[in-house]
Image (cartoon, rainbow, N blue to C red; front, top):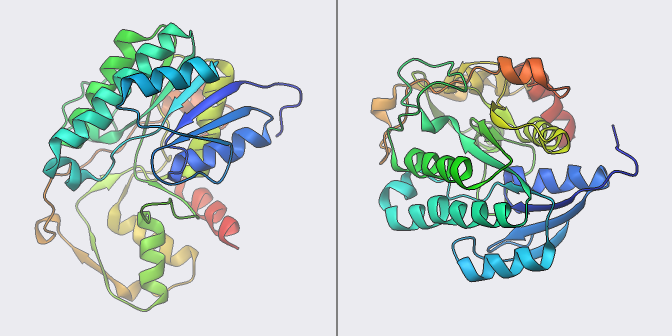
Length: 300
């Protein structure tokens, strides 16, 4: 539904990423004035603004120029293994960068939504609620948790939105998401090794973007788990994908996580409880069947 005559001056960081690009696209459709912040790849939608979030002075200049009423901070180094290998870089982007954004949101009295992750949890129990104690098992999760702390401590009005395994119908500029990677493999009739012992709440970027925009427009504060409504193992998710797109599931090879040579430890079950979002939002978290059918329509 389009919102007529209602416009927020909106700054979106990570605007060329999987979530950021969808956020920009949908926000423009809803008549918001969108400033699309990026570091390397020019975004497809919105007024592009290039800056490095870890460069304090530049971030300050941008905020002074744009004077945003609301900010979605989606920019992050999300490559889990790279964060483990390049800790200084991960800290600079995910922790220091978020601190810079938080301070300026306070200064400009801008409502901020920070996109966080299920990886702030240790994965020992799954179906985490918003008030469960974070305890990350890898450096990526730690830097994102520190980002959450900056948002909580340094801003007046904020929402921390945790998502899980974000996927979508269009590849982000610098990397392919799990769903598109698997579909490509299966279309080429190539084997894909998928773990059976890792559970998440896969989240369609379109669904997440709609939920985030509602949070912004209604100025909902606090922590929200804005993830898909179905807890799935990676293997189950892969099978659902194959079936939705009428591809041969025999090319999906089930393996245990011990057989995959990851650098960073992964939480075993970081699935998220989305009851709060279901009860609060008009844009509900989608069940896996609904989300994959929506993705299929977008691809067609």
